[in-house]
View 1: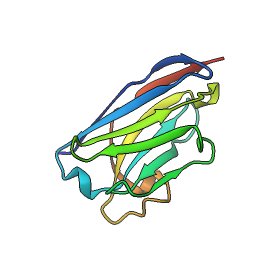
View 2: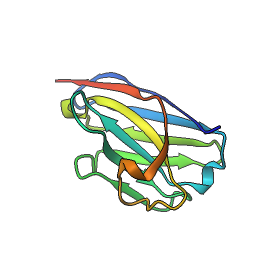
View 3: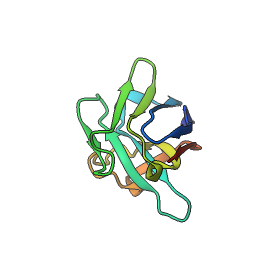
View 4: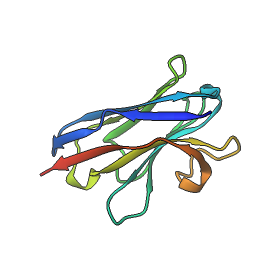
Amino acid sequence: QVQLVESGGGSVQAGGSLRLSCAASGYVYSFYCMGWFRQAPGQEREGVAAITAGGGSTYYADSVKGRFTISRDNAKNTLYLQMNSLKPEDTAVYYCARAYATSSCDALAAYLYSNWGQGTQVTVSS
């Protein structure tokens, strides 16, 4: 059974940093593209970043380029999202997700992902 468990969310002031983690279990982690998504109240879920199975390629939404970094440790079955220079508009629930085996990793579209964590809240105050 696939399980994805996020941690590391919290409240920070604008300009601060947070590092999210996602522990994966129940499947061969190193075989799949992984992504981070976020959803603010009243808004649709949006793709933030994705990383290919081996970690060789990463993709970002324009809104976070240069501020967020996605990475993975396949030996630890863990996905990370380092978030720097946080802005109030980054406030949302952040989800990690596993893509379908045949999904393209560069599309950052929710329908390409089959499994989701429960989410972790990130709140950025001005």
